[in-house]
Length: 500
Image (cartoon, rainbow, N blue to C red; front, side):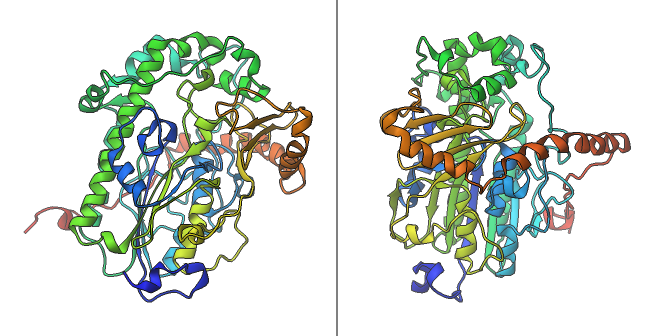
């Protein structure tokens, strides 16, 4: 590896030798369950080894605790309120450059294997090609209205006895089949890389539910001790209006006792840990094929996730929550010949695309809302700035934000009482400090981050509601016409199989 490469790219011109980049993303992978991040459940030997040779960002946050908006931020370096991607049925404009566009313009072959959950007609957003189609549909079908009042069938299926029996435990799923294909295609690519710099994004849909797990991995955790969440007697009284709305969306206002049942919690966490272990083995395979093909010392490796997963913490499931288990994600950046270090200053997934653009020596043509982490990876001090996550979609349908600054974390939901936590004193976020006299200054500071004018709260709320009927018309017509935007793969049998 040339010495020029290990210099901070943001302070030097583009070098003749561009590094290859392998970016690996897992879905809904909370760091609190990964032993690579000091977590409590999943054995992740390969990520642990990678973390030991990487810049390990221990306080990384998703810009939005839900798949499509988070991934729009990951691609663009912009907040969801900037791109207008508010929920899992929202596209973002094709004229917004992504890191894939910038790296393509820097001479990279940019390739995607796996999930990126693009919505709309643009199923590339700057990638030259995809190695497989997406795991989820590309249309507007996941833009929802508010749930009907007290409808026990609406989303409450998540924790019916039938759902638990069918979706947690040893077995197989379409999601596992998809990740097998994603893994195979990525391995195939790494064995036949081009004679130019390449950037391969490998995006697994696991450990996102369902928690159907190959029997081998399920049995690994048969006798594992995975700690369960502790529930104070007054837990329901600690919920904010936002929390109540998210719990209701997930059906927990009707089935809260089932999520708190230790038997169900153990099964859910066992399933998550086993799937995280499965993904970790896939990551190990990718790193091994880099070594086997002489690519390891010319390749930057990044591992991260789109958002976290509550896994029963605070009596909640899935994502959408503003609490730590939902908003925190892992982030390891391994640049060969650069000394490993641990960085505890809070950062955002928004920073990853800006860092990639910086590595490629490109200059953004617009102001991005993430920042390059390249200087920090090389040992420079990283300034503590507000790190923001936002969620405005189904179940809430109004502007909602999380702000992390230093030890403080602030939750804001437009029109409702906020929450303020000191994570140093209260890592599980039970003690709301809003209104405490000795917290007044930080409360005002963090509130101003949201309400001070940078975010147009009225515009966000109006757009969230106004788009629903528009998308429904298009969705109904596409269903009637039997049309879809799903990415189609052109299989070349001559190149793929023995034909002569």
